Length: 542
Length: 76
Image (cartoon, rainbow over all chains, first blue to last red; front, side, top):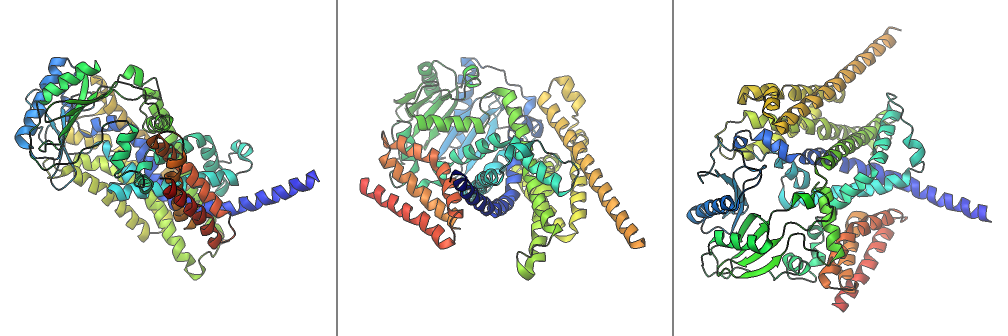
């Protein structure tokens, strides 16, 4: 009887497993194209700061001291405030970050009339705006952060990334269900054996990185859950902001009154906040500075000694002021505990996703796992293709060859095309004229332009040749990056190493290493293509 | 389609309903729902794929979603 039950059970599970296979195949393929891009840019985004240093060499000739004295801090706030009052008195938002290792200037943000934030930096000594030869028009490493979570498309991008990440989570769950012999297959890797190798590589990498893949996709979705499930929130709150302030147990947000007013001295607010928090401040903002509802927040500098050690860290504290009369409205002390398990969960997920703790070793771990994850996705989409090429499954009737051709084109564009676009961004950064208006925007345009060009290339020529050519192109662009850097800025990695500029050195070395890997791969592809030609000839002769 | 869209409606109803039935403050309950949302969503999607046809898949998503939504409106 027991045996019978067991048999029925296996049958049921077997049916379910068969059902999950097409789910995994198609959800994985469709999501895979964008997921590869999301993984690659996310992996680069782990090191957005070193990338920014390479991408904006002029800015980093300014050297910011590791820790600022209180006199320096208040002096910088005064310079930023003077700039805002003179040039942007009617903006809807002012924000100011003090100089640090990442941003050696005084970082300013203000809201533009047409919407969106403008970012600029002031020279910390003169208090003057840094020009194009002192602060290159570039998004720097942040370009990859933006592409990673919103594809440079604002809210629409966040929803698209969310949808494919959801498909990834679905692929992971269905993949585990399909894969009954998960541990046995883990020890099977058949290298250089065609389809089996791709399947093994896909499975091995996925199993190896499964905890990371689950963590990164779930945390990525959960930290944006407020956006994705806004309809559920607005059932209980008037605005998503209302939920946020209620969760943080803070006074509710104010709305503009329309009466004009002028904020009190920001230097004074900053000094009072530092005294209250007993901690240096590093950021101050004013919401609606020209309105009588103006509010100001001063943020305390997170203590790296505590923050690096703990997954759960509540930040460096924050003081909220009425910016019109200077009244202190609310104080959150540095690392003050919030009595909410669900909120703690979000903080932990966010800090794990964004590598905000654990220092360099955790960053490298995420970087390596991200690369393995990207390879797993690429192997999966290639595997899909190889299976279809071997036996025509006639899934779409007479349109099948056309659909397959489109899928193949998208595969190439999504994998090698994206890689070429990524390295192309670094080239655009060096080659675009320094005084070009909206230069940062043009760099992003170049990135997407190159990506599109690669897609067109893939659509026009035979696939096998395009794989090879784009792989060569990527290798060449990577390997010549140090040369173009030398020609345009006069910098090179020996100089970087001598100066102790290890971030820039590592970026350049990284490009060379990826170039060598791509070179090896393209030589392998070329050789295999030749072998195939020969065997075809031999068969013809025979 | 039933999985992606139906699952979304199901999860939205779940999150807003949990906000009123979970003990404690409304904001905490809401946050709990949001953090669990994507586990619920993937579960719902896997469930729809086990249904024999798409009509059934829509039904198993929409009926519980409607019940949770009604319950939320009634309790809040």
